[in-house]
Length: 545
Image (cartoon, rainbow, N blue to C red; front, side, top):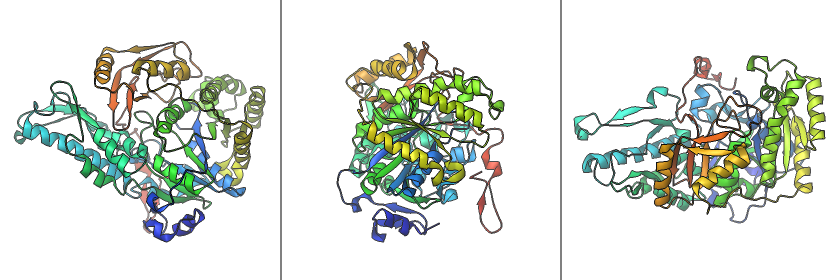
């Protein structure tokens, strides 16, 4: 591992522009970097519909950066911070894998520079101020105590906290009510931080957060509770991007990590914008497949104006996911099955079509696994050529940068031969229902949208209160293009059922919840935490797998 000052020097950053966290991590204050329009080209990494284990999107993004630097380009990664929930829960570490990783992995996966702790503190400060106002004014004061929308957060999978009751103590005035905890990555404060262009924008967005309503159903905001200043103070340093490095010494900004369901699922725009001012190529990623992550990147993140349209989009695919969508059970994915792979190709094609609908060049990265057979790879290549699909075999997990050179070449070629003609999926002037219907029809393949009664009531209230012009963030399963995780492949003609609508006024979108989306995950029967330990010499083991 190289000293972080050496990594920063590759981007033209001096020691006086860094806030060091040891010798291998640093925060960068964007105010110290010369202002100007980003000159770098943005590469967005997304994926086909994943299996429960994921398809290696982060690994591919890191390997692509290493490959670009290897062939003489100036490239940097801009990725999300891991949450402690997945680290100790089902997925384990989230810093890439094999020879395509960001380091120091243990630090990044654990407390890192304290950003997520700051977000938890700011969120829960607002929760405390809500309760304090109810305590002194009663449940019929500024806030209608029956309709408090603001919950609490903790950066840990703890299913016991999903639903709790507060206000049982006598000092609370005898007013008890139901609330609960979400995981910090699902906090609107996380989404706000990641969508803020600068400190002033952060403060303004925090002030617009709606915590509940008054007795006459008017929205009550954080600004009305005089919470904005203190929340901003807690988040001031957290707004600055974190600089680390890959195994091969490529610079990487790791900053922010909003939930990819309940929020937009990408790292901060301030980190991506900074990277684009310092490098020629910036590789970022979005959550889950293109139906969730890429659509939200295009229709939510790009509307901030803080980052430019991607010059190319990489869709990560695997033979195991193709076989999974071709009908193969999870426990049989390692077995050769060319027919199932070809059948499951329709799912990948759907994601290619989604990206092309936005007018952007597409390159498919076939992320290689040790169990992939020559017959399967050859059959995929033949199918891709038949479909006139630009693709490359990626082996960055096993070979690092050299394993991504072919992919890097295809991405660069796509930028030259397929110029971007980007277009948003819907105008903000459309109604909330029209936006949901457009996403459901054009991206998911649904033939209609069904709003349950609770969602209909909130829809009218949101539009009456002036929130109809916000973007829409659909929260649904990541395991299907539909809202039913059992519908694999490329389902068509199904109804998309909206069970609830949630307002994220500070972030700038309305969440359309479809199905049962967990904002506080639980740990599996055998959580990753059971395999993490510290050796006698102080080395943390078990996180990276």
